[in-house]
Length: 330
Image 1 (cartoon, rainbow, N blue to C red):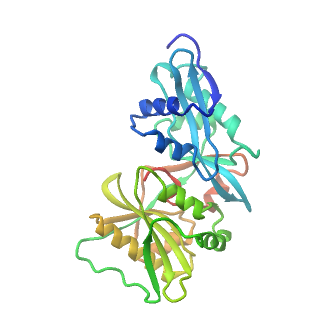
Image 2 (cartoon, helix red, strand yellow; image 1 turned 30 degrees about the vertical axis):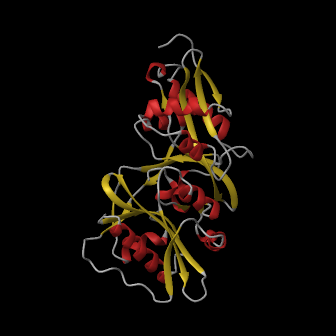
Image 3 (tube, rainbow, N blue to C red; image 1 turned 90 degrees about the horizontal axis):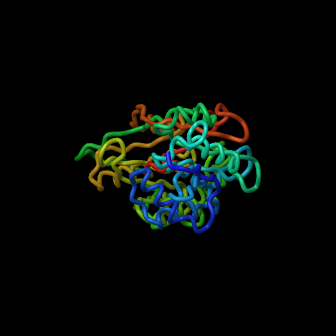
């Protein structure tokens, strides 16, 4: 272990290059600053939730942080964070009583998790190999497994029939009336990331290193927005798989569900994939609706965990509306 213990401190403007270099080295990644700033600085919450370990000689040698966004929880709009891209340089892993990873995590939670105006009410993640240490030393709790709904889309199969009074079109970025759609659906969602125009624009339309298909479903004659979905193809778990990343449709709007699902399936086939997958909370009625429309269910390697300043894992287990878009997997 190098001489001298690293200093643990919050991120400060100007740390960007050093943090990115540490993460790319530790994670074997090749992200650039534009991607990094999109993820950690230009987010919907306008917060940078990062705790750093800085060594006098080696610079930034550890990072523990989260991508911030806005969610609704318990009738309030609050800041939350998805914990991602933690890393510690191998030669500094043993620093501290339980290692530098644990020291960073404790400092992060002490500073950023809470009910304060500049804190996140809860942070969540999809654990990696460090899960046992996080559970033991940092108090992370399991919310539930991430099961997927999926449908095979064999070549030559007829497209799904859709209601004639609705039309679905891809859009470059979401229209302003998505805010009203989310406001109408929000009371039924429980705990959920605020899926408004700013969210869709940030998460999908302006992400610098990936392209998504954003779909709007509208009434053909009135133009009223009935639903929004996001589709993409990626090499996650299985190569060239179609993913239904986001879904903002009233649970009881069967026609909009069918129309958007047909469009997402068509986009997946057009991209050369024969499988479409999505993630929904099994407590949410949409999980059952998709099964009624021909989707099957299976497990995944992922499970959802969190630390929260209010309530407990059971509260979130029953109420959390999530999709794949809540993660950074695709």
